Length: 147
Length: 278
Image 1 (tube, rainbow over the protein chains, first blue to last red):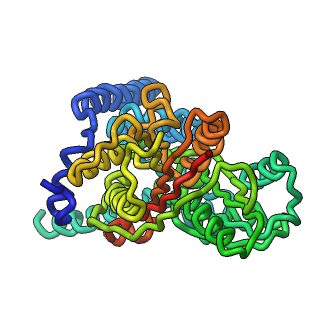
Image 2 (spheres, one colour):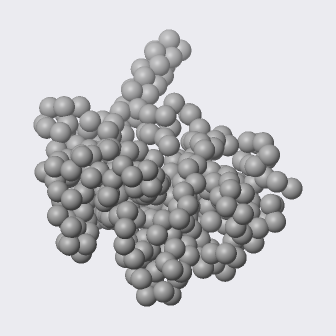
């Protein structure tokens, strides 16, 4: 059979030929690295409460510390290696969000501080903000009406 | 980098830049700026060309046609690509911690240049087969090998039909940057027409990286892939007669980042030249 007869047959043939990502390995790495990041967050949280901060302030400190660590690791070319290894494990927690803002800021600095860093900082994280905020507004309205 | 490559080939050939009639160059960056910015000080009449990763072979085809038509005595064909600038333009920022699919390829950082002359002792460009644009509706920008393989196949078949040659007439056949996935597909496609391209066929994207140690997934890609492999690996083998007749097929994916976002498919192109030493 000639696989390039139609685009459909070729697509099926290509899917067969292309190697799949190692899903089990990726899931396992994502699971333990993601868990580790969350545990670090929890340790910071407990420590802050132990030092006498209330729950809201302690949560804020956790976010600030994790974002700070991610930004520094992104800047010194380490976070992308962790991300390549752990995938969603680093991308789903707040670390992924910080990385997705810091990395374009570094990349586009050559285009100036206003149109480069300022405008392109959100090229990756922009959609998360738009749809995340829209969803929270929507759910807020539903909650307000029902409760 | 491209200026280094062109100055390097000028030094090796003992030709002055004023003796070069035309310069054919191109690259992957928007409006081919690496070539025009890198080569602006050379003051050689310049044709900027774009054939994506097939640019080097496209330049060699055009250059040899210029020589054959007595329009020039010496021409330079040059190209370059860079991993970081290609990632920035086509994919994500470098520091973004993401995972690449197994079919994705790694852009070669390098530059290559060749001088073609009307007279000399060879190696000679004996045939050129310009490619047709082939599009089989592959939309995955992380699977360029699959998008370009049908174009490489079409050009290969046209070349054999045109010249009456068969794969066994060549000591080696090289494709530009099909990678592991595309190489496998091309071998399969050739079989459907009864051509066996196995032992004497290699892909420059497969040759240039160590897949395991360098973790480059489906191999190398980019304009510099075939340009560097030809200039530094194949050409010396021709000069010491280890290879006498080779077919070079430059393969390119004619897309940009906007066309991918707009869910357009990826058209492929492949140009071939046969290079021989007597």
